[in-house]
Amino acid sequence: MRLENVWLRYHRRGSWVLRGVDVQIGPGEVAVVLGRNGVGKSTLLQVAAGVLRPGRGRVVDRPARVGWVPERFPADQPFTVSRYLTGMARVAGLGRSAADEAVTTWTQRLGLGAFSSVRLPELSKGTAQKVGLAQAMLRRPGLLVLDEPWEGLDAATRDLVPGLIDEVLAAGGTVLVSDHRGETVRLPAARRWAVAAGSLTEETAPTDEAVAVVEVAVPAARVASTVARLRAEGHQILRVRADASTTAPQAHPSAPSSPSALDQPEGADAVEQAAGEAR
Amino acid sequence: MSALVRMRLAGFLRTGRALAPLLAGLVVLGTLYGGGRAQPAEAYGVSAVVLFPVLAWQTKILLDIEPDVQRRLAQVTVGVARERLAGLLAAVVAALVAVAVALVFPWLVGGVTGPVEPGDRSVPVGIALGLWAHLLAVPAAVALGALASRASAGGAAYGVAVLALGGVGAVVLGLSGSVAPWLAPPIMATARTTAGDAAALTLLGLTLWGLAWSAAAVGGYLWRRRAQG
Image (cartoon, rainbow over all chains, first blue to last red; front, side, top):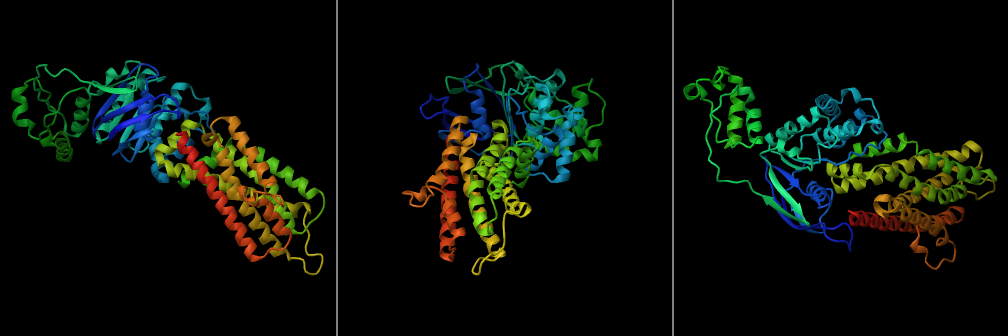
């Protein structure tokens, strides 16, 4: 997805909030949007999500499925949590049974099960924010846009957010996150976009650090999740191979003796898939 | 998109705010039919006139109930065009329910009568003309209500002003001898036609006029939505 020379202002004679933003992000990448209050972080995210239309410039190659978690979930609606999420799943194009399944999955994962029959206006801010998170994930998004996703969440749910981001990235999606609480330290692999005075600059990480290669053996069934987690932690995945039994024990005598990928035929596909993603 | 239409209608009904235009509609219909009996075509023509501002108000309420951020969430999920269209379709469905009530109401309160003199229209013809008059008012009322909605008009005061000017303007500009009848939807001309000689060409012309006015108003609504972001 690319933002090409994007300018935006809210009123015809108002000042420009975004000024000639040019930026590109690809599948499997996450970017954190940083900046002081009022510099245009949310505006940039809403342009990327398709909520706002640029006054000048354009957004190209935006993924078809976009999940947007607004900074404040609109809880002033006459629905229960379950009915709202089911409605949004149907709006997103899921069939009746798929919608019910998705709602059940995400209410459980986000700890919303006890609130299923509670009306949205009666929810606390943090619980309402979880509903906002759930509606964005009901149908796996190709682009997930999170505007201050940690705001108001309890510690347990805050810990869940990086995992959700990893899932989107592992499926080839793109994630944009804004944060002013410093929570994005949980996303060390993220690109860092700094917004100031309407312009965007990318903060680059130092590249002159010495690097070492560590070989790790994992059960085949966990290859994809491990690759995603290591990527999210900032590690570079060089390759994934299915012959760990020939080299791993020699290189790492203390490596766990869990079954290797070769010992689990059902894991061969996962290894192959992860290897393809690593390439 | 039908899921979004259903969700918006559900929101409209669940808030209870649907009661206000419903009660207003019943009051104006009760006032209209409380004064005596009339033949269906003539009665329905006036009914469409008095319902026009009520349907526009109902549309504004329906569109305004949804929080702005929820409307944007819907836009992200289904796209800009479908989000706009879903709102208008939900308003049309709600308006058609009101029209059904308006068509049945006079029969319940004894406000209409059959042919009295030779040459009077039959009841089925009168009902058909009444249905046409109401259906012609629906797109115009929905378009006016959409123009007056928060997402289009911006501030609440602008929305009320658009609604009031549109409602009053439709009556004033539609009076016989108006200098600019084409600026308003043809609800007054429709009422005159149902009460008088309803020639086929006249009906066709009024239908085209009503649809053209509605299309222009919907175009204005879409342009305002685009300008509002």
